[in-house]
Image 1 (cartoon, helix red, strand yellow):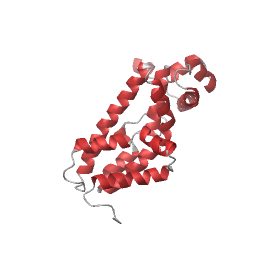
Image 2 (cartoon, rainbow, N blue to C red):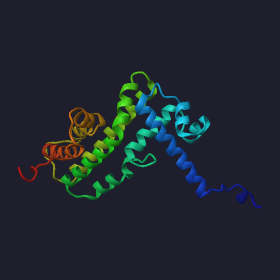
Image 3 (cartoon, rainbow, N blue to C red):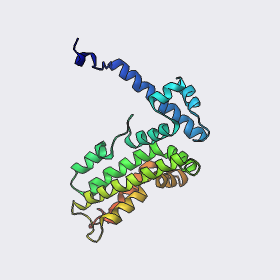
Image 4 (tube, rainbow, N blue to C red):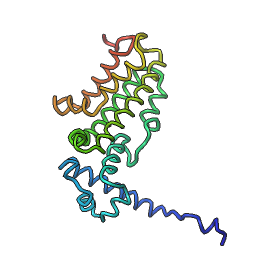
Length: 220
């Protein structure tokens, strides 16, 4: 048998699906434990027990505790079982296809609401643990920096429509959106002040429209 045939790696769809389910189960178990008892109090052994797998399986399928938490954040951001780069997410592609700034803001406000609903409980864990766990502080800072970079791209996309106030620049737009699309901002209004998620989404669209658009929203 030729060496090229011998060296081929056989991939079983059933095995791949089982691996995916194992990984998904581990992440779900970790999310329950992290949000219930915090990052520091949660161990890999507890995650393994909660997921019904061996400790070695947790490390092989996902990784160490900080990697597990990082993956939970990434899947909360993407809304899928895997980390997805921002430019490949469905709502980003829809926004790029839209030609009016108001439409883009509406689409993004809906995405912010959906992401914040998934990310909110994990954000609280991250906020509380980052001061004591340097690995989580690095994850928090990396995500914040990545969001800021993505918001500059969003700002350029909005400006390209010609719908924005001419005195606004990329940096100002990006910084304002960056501050208002955070899970913390959502948590303050929805959980602390009791806003309905739908109200938050509509308010976000309206506020961004009033801040950025050259023409006021219809009805003003």
